[in-house]
Image (tube, rainbow, N blue to C red; front, side):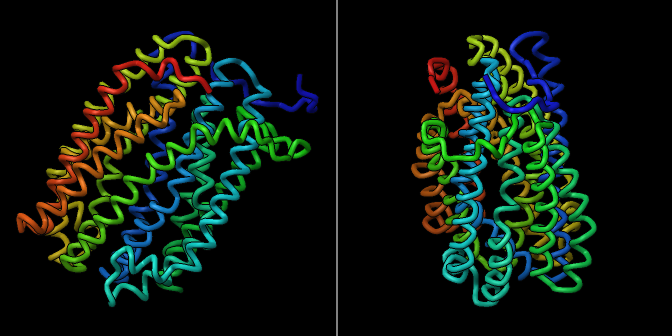
Length: 451
């Protein structure tokens, strides 16, 4: 039994019984809103960076591409900790869930701090590896050093939020997203006009810091589903080991697409800064269009993890089946609308005609691929919620390194299709990956996973 003092804590969200569809919608709509708010800074940032020119857009795009590759370990930690916490929640073990949350936050803090220091020290070579042209490189280095200086604040918000969503409480990440977005809306116009591209980075860091301290405050005061008791602040190696066993395959699984995107961004950069800027803006538009599907997919770990903890694997299967069907239908509608309005959407972010025309072509070419990606997210998240991060890792390795990346180079350079070959390869790779992940989930071996 816990010897902690009585604190007013939120009850665990029990989704192991009752109406399944009701639970899914109750958990998914706050996550959808928080996902929209999480994606909004990227879109808002693109609008303001557009005021500084296409070089600023390209610099930010390369920085974020490199950053996404480097933070793969943090993405894996949030996935691994969410799976462990959800399993304890499903088993009604509050002390176990609290202990897992504390060790997860310690791992996230140390990891993001180390990555931030490395990013600052090696900003220039990292931007060169990312494909920055001579014109873009100085801006990219300046922006990257600011972003990596505040990496702890930027990454703790989604990491902690994902963990608590897996515990069955999406309201924490929703409130953190509201705080960070509200702060950014106010800060970015002021700081960009005052400091240029560095101001955009500082606005992103400051807005996330506000949300981070609020979320940590909930954990410390016991107003979240799990609680951090500072009197128990110590390294718990067995619990860390439990989290890391789930996390380590996920590092590769999360890192491979991020690394692939970095390589492909470098390939795209060879076709000119206008094409690179179009690629950067298009990805942000399509990521925003994916919000409904991603929001729905993010409830899958909670349903799988908690129902496995409660020894109800078939209930988890039914939940994932419903989530996948709804995700596919909603994503098809949203992405179809984005493809129809491609030029108008691009015009929101840039007034450069070449970038608008190129971006509209990219957006339409990638719409089918993003639809497959949305479907893939559901089964990927479901496997992770079961603690099976090895299967998604293997699927990612096959789809990316045997299909997507080689095909992109083959079509772009070997077949002389240029940038169009890259867009075709991306879509085909995502479709192939989605099919593999669906087949793996249907095999059902995740039901036997022990944490």
